[in-house]
View (cartoon, rainbow, N blue to C red):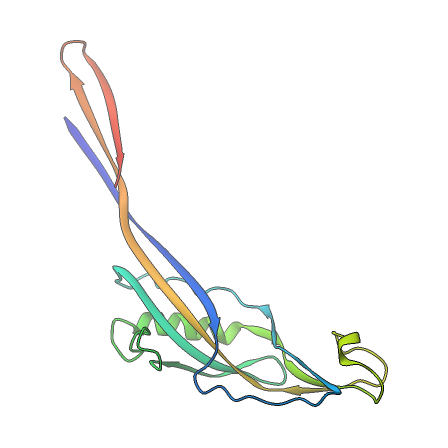
Length: 174
């Protein structure tokens, strides 16, 4: 009987935008509309090649999208107890991967649109009508990045059947 095994690791990254703790709220007037920052380039971070992870690691990261749509002031934190400690050595490669990726993200920046008297802000959701003043504003966003890894693989056994002189293959996923 010959036994061949190959093991692989399944790694994935999921992300979600969440409300920052103690989020600052800005009121808009009845003749104004807030336009949320919209991502135009936001790839997922790569799973760090040399990282050791069994199970899951959740990073919480906040950053500012400035008026030009660039990401600034990236901070990994532990404001939520479900978040990994960003200064823990095991988290370092994941923090580095997220930080490097966030530096490449680009947005259409957030803005406050002020409409002329008599114009309903709901009638112009893109704020591109005549007389509309668009003022870009920075905004702080918060994301969670959940990295997960599982060991798995395929084991293949070749079994000799002496009575018929044939080989058959038995495969199992594990």
